[in-house]
View 1: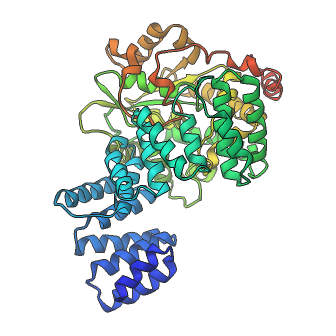
View 2 (view 1 turned 45 degrees about the vertical axis):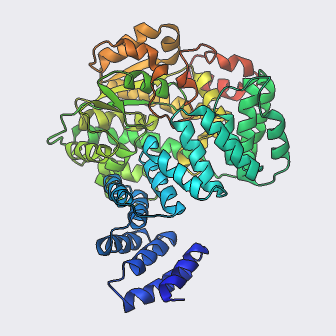
View 3 (view 1 turned 180 degrees about the vertical axis):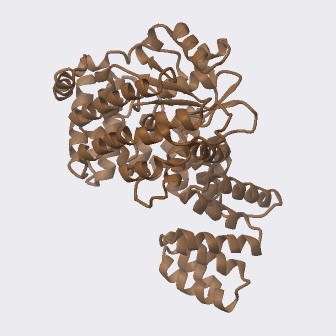
Length: 523
């Protein structure tokens, strides 16, 4: 076995430290070996040395054009948020595939994951499908394929894919969770007994969390609202006990946003972009995806999904190297920077997520509500739409949704009182923005959209400087992918059963009502 073959075997065995050692020796002996550079780059990235990994992977692709090399280069570029370069690497990988290069299942799955990270779910699907055809027994490949099918609206195919995966791995919690969210379950057709049995049989905390949310969702679907909420209370209490969240940290960020605003308000704005993106902001689970679907049904608009581009542009301008994208230090260091440059940086970062059709694009990252004043100055032609929902329904919808467990930004969502505290600060900040940048933000009540769909849609279009289009009323016919938890809901026409849903759980929501009463927020 040669040194390169040994390095490959070590990599496939999940031993990146040993892989790096062998690959480094091979690189020293053969500096022009593309394979040595590639194996060294992948092992460095696996060990957390992303910059060194990128350097070696770039050298590998310079020495040899290979779909495998480009796929892993794209993956590493995404880790450091270089989305445009990642898309270019994927383009090169596609060229290699077009030249009949044979690639393994992992390369196809890696390409699919990279496309998914870019929000290009339609482009990810053929790669995930190819990976599953090559290795039908690989659970990760099967899951990626099934969830991608759900994102593009292929519900029946996704359900079949999830069930095949569960036939292989009956305890796969992610598959159970994905399957539960595909459609509204019925009393005649649901997975409640199976979910109960699987959850009772596992002690793994992450699996119990996913299975608990899946069970609660299906119980509500079949009309067992009280059992559903009791399940959620238990699940969230169990998870909350394992995380070290303190609302005071979020309160510090809200304080810093308000305190740094005078500097942002007086900062220079040089050569601000003339483009007019549309920002949809608000608390999560308040109708942001619904408005995104309504607007992206307009012939002149396309959705770019939930971008991190503006937070990253601010972070880059600040020059801070703190762990989190948003923190007080970052805000104060960015506050005196040229907002025109931040706007330009945003547009450059967003470009790789937007089709080159010339249409206006939507950025529907709800958390941009924290940057609304900065957005208004950095992008003077941008339209900003903020979704509002009844405070108690906002609490319920956040409590019921499982956000990314690896993100600290949603850690408030596992406790009813803490969600209410977060809402109070959100509400205060929106009042602050309305006073600071008057007439720039249109606030839309979810309840108005449900009860007065056409009238409210007209107001949204006027605020975004868009002509009326009947297609905005039939948003549920929009076939573009959706990767948010609202995917199943927004493929239905407007429905009213989510309005005042909180009254079903009024007794359990006592802590939220107390917080709102103290803050003077009427429920």
